[in-house]
Length: 136
Length: 212
Length: 276
Image 1: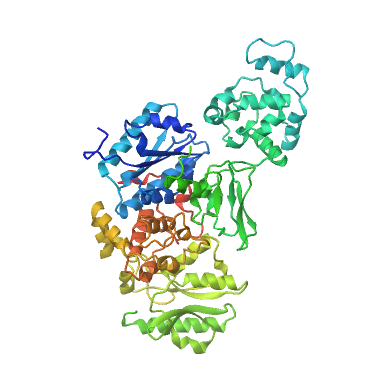
Image 2: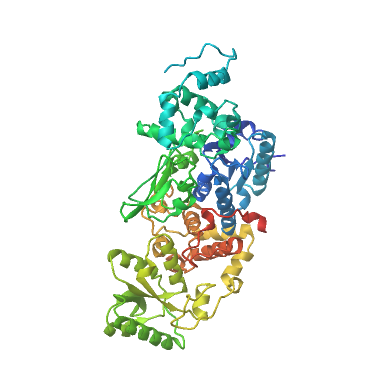
């Protein structure tokens, strides 16, 4: 079940790169049922654009989680943008943990546009973990 | 030059291959193609393309770019040869191309497509067209710390004299591919990628826009 | 406020001697060090031997920021800087950013004693070369009680700890102002879109965590931020935890060498989360 025990539906800010998920509308089809309204999506050119500040600000603005979807290793359109995001967001997670914020709130999934089933499954996994940690 | 097709076409809806062989024997390289050759300083020999489309099959922009004009590496070369200048100069393809080189790698004829795209970008800028996704530096605020230079894979950023502290970073819009990495590392928000600048993203978080 | 300790007078004497000999040469315009005034220390550029009787190496002041501004004002000329380990690391980090020209600075290294190291929860209380004082070597991170406490807390305990503490913040920007590495023109924390004007305490967790994130690969652990906070918020401690993390996972330490490039700016792919 993807709903928390108290029917908590987390508010998620979803940033996806335009090369692994070209259409923002398509993202809606990859979300678990009932989560469409809870997820705000925005398309960026590359996950390299993800600043730590954005994720931090998201929490301040009432989001419970931030999900970043980018290309698999080796597939970045800009060569290594995904790697930068990988390292940066990994560090951000550890930092948040020191401040008492669950690292599960920052999700990073690296996908191929040719495997929507896998994308859907990974998004589902992230939301389940987020449910587990509750509201921000 | 119009979209003239030689008398003998293969009859397929995409009479591309037929056109290309005809182009090689009957039609000389158009002015635009020669301009491309001249501007790059290399003999790019665009006419060696025989339209196999392996380049397009590995091109992310062609497949995922969602471009209205549907320019692909193959059609880009075709349009260059037949002189469809306007179409190419005003296409978004040339700005979304990141120079990744997969097309050149895949090409059995070794056509230097990324370089051709670079040249078209420069020609386009010469004609007054702006790079729609380039980053720009606010020179008053830049601390010349060099972080953006370090992360820019296209070497589009250099340190030049100027600004309020003697040195500033400067983006060459002809090289910038719009990835946004520079914008992410600037603590100062001095360099901003357009259109995904920090104001837009913060507004998204504040719920003011549901942008795609 | 400084604690009185034995053996300090030797250190201070040595410092004054070194400053005196530097002033006799033509290599520097002055010696930037701490001047004792009543019970406080202030940064001062000593330019004559007569002033040296007020020079002290006790007391804590993040002097690198002053060095940066001095060199900015003068187009030419060199200065000597009486620098503790953290001050020297600041200078190296500032040089990485191009904010300071190290060839214009002569560092006189001051080593901290164990009390000073403990007061700052410092793991590296010494400069490259200890011209004044004796280096005690590295102090293990876990030997610092307060840091140990934080690390041993559960995540929910940490959450309540920091939420309560950050609620005391009056947004005086003392932490930001005291930090020599926070030298951005147009600091993001003063931009409406990131931190709203007139909101006290500032939005949680934006204000403090954005600063923490910016400093992740730059903070050298001087604790000036914590000392500056009028509300007793132990902000510096969080920075120290992140600094240790950077060392553990990337082998990276801010302020070690000017040539070092931060792993957050590219480099090898390391999933920090995997390394549990």
